[in-house]
Length: 304
Image (cartoon, rainbow, N blue to C red; front, side, top):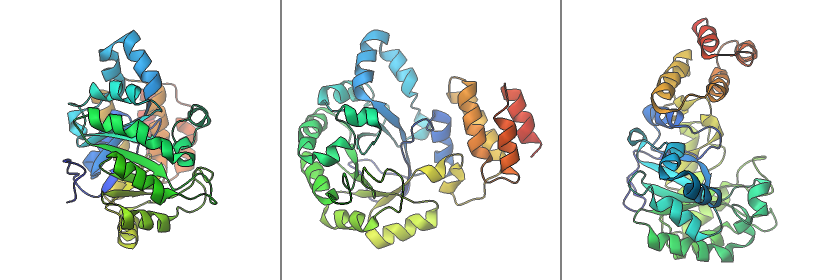
């Protein structure tokens, strides 16, 4: 198995950093189902660095809620000042295996603060952010990019070259530009071009909805790993190519009660996602959105 720095993933299929999805229970369940590595949700390093001074380290650890059960794992940060990411990352070097830097987020707030996919338009600024982080941390630093700002300014290969020279241990490539967001088909030709030039592992991302699709993309592009994103929501079984059942939700709930601080709204959202693909899913979802407590959710699932 190819390593990322000194980290050896369990296999070639990774859980992407999904905002609002990747609670500890979901990450652990994806690991149980076969994910080779799991990522945290994206963390705003600037905001978090300020909060640490106010609420303290323990609240920060509780918020991240990374567990030994999910390792090897990665925590992803977005930011534009190395000191912010370094401050947040140094505190968890012994708790996670990889620190990932997001250069692909397209949220308007992130772009407005010159972070995330903003760097695809200004790749020359990547080095000053990445180099100090790589120097200060004892664990591998990786980066996630998009292939460019627009279809007329695709520069994924040059972004990857800059990042490799800055010292990252691997690069994840989402095969869409910033302007495409999540629409249209991912451009795996650019992923292939990046892999052909790179001297470090490349993780391909975009439109992977099953293990067979991932294997095919790795064969076509030569990339070393693939990342599964939206196809995993409500369906950790995607990592084992097994059929989803109602028992998957009950396993999620069991893990959630053990590892997460209980938030009914979060459980309810996951319950709706887990219903997708089940028989009579539309009607089940309509019932779930009306629930007021966990007992009501359990009763609905027991009747499936």
